[in-house]
Amino acid sequence: MRTPATNFRSILLLLLAALLLPQAAGAQKLKERMAQRYAEVFDYPRMAAVYEDIVTSGKGDVSDMRRLALAYKRMGEWGKAEQTYTRIMGTGSASPQDMWDYAEVLRNNGKYEEAMEWYANYA
Image 1 (cartoon, rainbow, N blue to C red):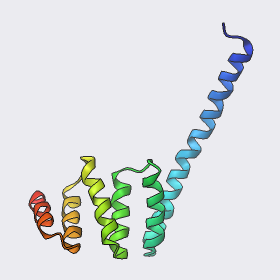
Image 2: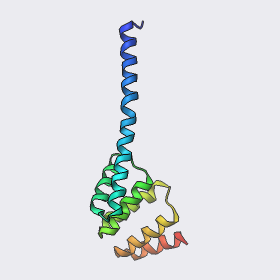
Image 3: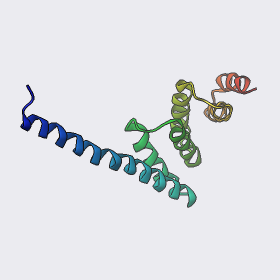
């Protein structure tokens, strides 16, 4: 049997959740805006740090992984870019441009046969 105290606790928990959830979504948007600003001024290390945080928190999507891979490429971090593109390819949401970029990263890392396979997938 639900007592008034139990009902009060339930309502209080629902209100608290309703207040905190929008803040979490707002924090995500803030991080994305920060990363975009870093990209605009070519500050790729900071851009990568923000997107690493977003992606590793599990809140990122494929577009966030793409931006992270771009930052790694611009910094010359080809190994990290390859790992990120490998994750993108594993999502099933890879675009033809992702395939091309992955092939380019593989070629840059000296993995020519794998790169040729991805160039063929692109074509």
